[in-house]
Image (tube, rainbow, N blue to C red; front, side):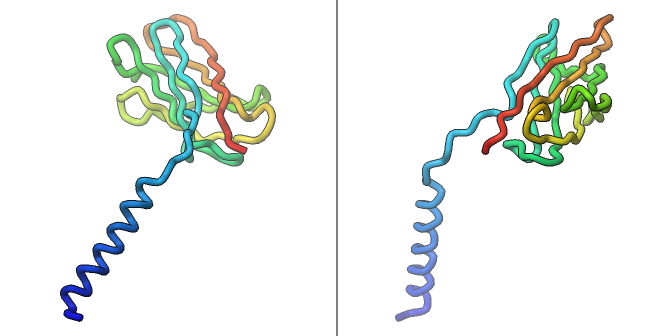
Length: 135
């Protein structure tokens, strides 16, 4: 067989295999948490890895205001247990995204607690985000 024809059939075979594997059925997945609202702010929490696993996970807290304005003038603290001290999340630019790692374990540590204090607000609030951790 001609080498060009042979490589054509090899490429066609591998291409078909990759195409069929990409069309496989994916499992439906839940978001890491559901977003919540406090005053005019919408707060969403995502984990890295996603979905979260037991052990250390990085959490991204996204704060947006009216008209999708980023909450870049906020102080965001997180923890995963009432007995833990609050840890300030680090602002990732001025886009309303804050990052911090925290421990996830069965029991109480399956909820991310976010303490939010924004520049326009005189008070702060604590929001609780139960995590969807697969078994």
